[in-house]
Length: 366
Ligand SMILES: CC(C)(COP(=O)(O)OP(=O)(O)OC[C@H]1O[C@@H](n2cnc3c(N)ncnc32)[C@H](O)[C@@H]1OP(=O)(O)O)[C@@H](O)C(=O)NCCC(=O)NCCS
Image 1: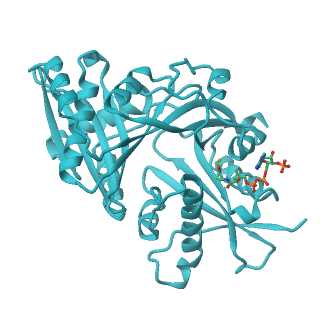
Image 2 (image 1 turned 90 degrees about the horizontal axis):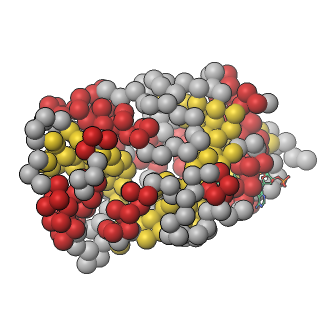
Image 3 (image 1 turned 30 degrees about the horizontal axis):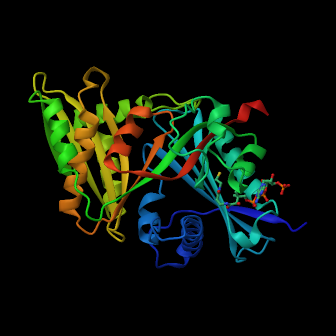
């Protein structure tokens, strides 16, 4: 059997020098896999954006591992593992993503990359590894079945290479996200927006920002971001609440700017208390403004049942249409057990295109 070499790929300062060669090869391999999977360029990330997004920050250590056949240092890179280690919370966890070039699959490259990533994670004191697998089409879309149990969840995930690979490495499927797309051509959220605003009533006001959160709201916004980390369903994932403060909000905004991403946030304020009661986030990368990605949507417990979720999402979609008229579609991920969020999205017109499996492996289990 051919020897597989695994080396660490540092994130270079820029893309022009000889030290960027491996990073560029990794960026290309990751883009090729996204293209292969989706059959389009909706998830293409220019190398410059990957450079801005793949470096370590005060809240996250990011490692890139590359695989080559043989021991020649300049042999072509045929596989990549990305390892993310949170540094301010969830110190028992890490997230791993393994991608192998089609020509090199089924030869143990993925397994070798995973083993190297798991070794790094263990050395950093991590006990639980999380991984995500993507699947187009797949299970019983839109049936409204409860998928909260692992067995039910498994019904949504086809037994393809990604699932077989994860299961074979000892990962357990803990949560299933439905991937949905909203087509924006001719789209008009005004009617649902008006209806939600009437139900919410005058006790709530909307705030909107593009890019940086206004300074007077940043602490309240950090609290919402923190709450979001555990308020969305987590299935069996052993994740604790993230630690967010104003500095982390600014770090995330800086990363988005570096990646040339537009971030549109709508938040809702409870007029009587002045408290921010919820928020929703859309992201668009300037290199491909046709595609928008839905990030967080949260309404705090005390304010649920007032149509604020719909109000926030419809309002932000209207902002998107005005701010970035080139946007043609929006991708979103929602836990299949998150009936409230799915109901809002279905009413807005989102349609399922696939599923994501969220997996967890206990490294201490052997
Ligand atoms: C999933 C992926 C990383 C596997 O890489 P690989 O180098 O082919 O994996 P390995 O050769 O180490 O395979 C390990 C085991 O995974 C399972 N497996 C991998 N590909 C499979 C396939 N096409 N069908 C069924 N089982 C498969 C098998 O159990 C295999 O062991 P075996 O070959 O002894 O039967 C690769 O297919 C890939 O890059 N897919 C796209 C990205 C992706 O889905 N990544 C997973 C995120 S964690």
